[in-house]
Amino acid sequence: MSTTNKPNATAKSTSSRQNASPIKWGAKIIVALLFVAFCRWLDTIKDRWYVFEPTALHHLAQEAIAVAGTNNTQGMIEHIVSTLTANHPASTVRINPDSSEWVFNNAGGAMGAMYIIHASITEYLMIFGTPLGTEGHTGLLSADDYFNILVGEQWAFRPGSLEMESYTPGSVHHLPRGTVKQYKMHKGCFALEYARGWIPPMLPFAFADGLSSTLDVPTMYNTVRITAREMIKNLLIGKI
Image 1 (cartoon, one colour):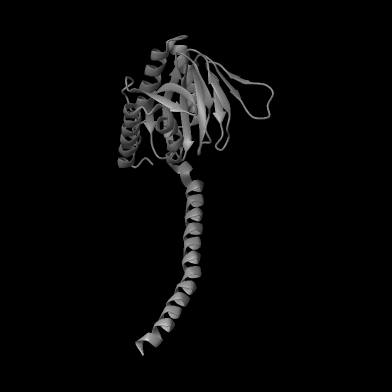
Image 2: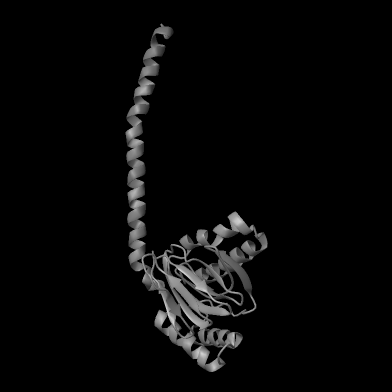
């Protein structure tokens, strides 16, 4: 009797699994669609968390060049940080005042050093450059990027263009979200870089060279430590 029922039980079990499969896939699709809709909604309101303005930062970079004098990069950095600290209360946004906190950055084949002035979920502000010069891929970024040249010169190239773009001290190179270029920073080029948009999705690009090529664990550790510290401190005061 039990032997006779076994094939029927097996058939019923198989049929149940087959019937459940479309339901499970349907549930997964619904969850995926809800997640995409949620992300799109977040994208429409991300501007409410911005603290910095591209135009104001461009003016600040130009002011730093005028105040500190040509090629006085350290003086420019000190002017930028002191001005930002004075104009943005510590209760609303975290500014990293330690201008000695430099780390290497390898991304898109280019290498330089950076000092992170601000890092949050929707914005970052840093000084980036190299006295040696470098060249690479900008990356496909999830944020608008504004490169305010302080000293030196940067070149850029977009596929399909037959002429290079040239950016000199006091100018700004705007890379809209989703745009990619080849770029070159000449010897002694430093810039005030500002990104506004979703910053966490940019981190894999920032770490790809370190994980696949340089294997510079101390640099990756310090980059994670500083970035996470600044993001968490900003979250604690409500800055997303």
